[in-house]
Image (cartoon, rainbow, N blue to C red):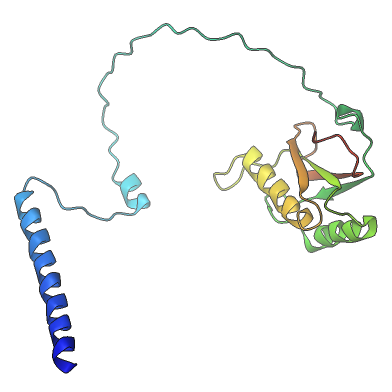
Length: 187
């Protein structure tokens, strides 16, 4: 038993040494290869040169683009845009650059979900407006993150959630609409 265990350990060590020798030999054959160096993004940006860039010639290739059919987008937010009246409408306000709702806004939303007795067959629509530009994140991205956080709160109650961006809403404003189960909003 002891001899078999020592043979197994010895075999493992020989295979390990063989693999390391093999990789060392391959690395010696690739002498022209520069060694890889880990750098941080900030260091790379700091080392960027501001010298002249070579002039590139751009050749224009004609392409055939299909005709696009433009559809009218309603500018006002009204319940008639989808044909059904919402069961309830809740207006939430976010701080200027906040992505998460305040505790008071979150409690207001959760109370409404309990009060309306929302089930998995109900539908919800989240209308979100623009947000200020901050921390290199554009306004639509912050607004979308806000809507996704609201959807995470709603999702345990109903999985039918639609999000819609409207530029006509005020900054930091999110409107949540709840619809009856027979709603044809998402069909």
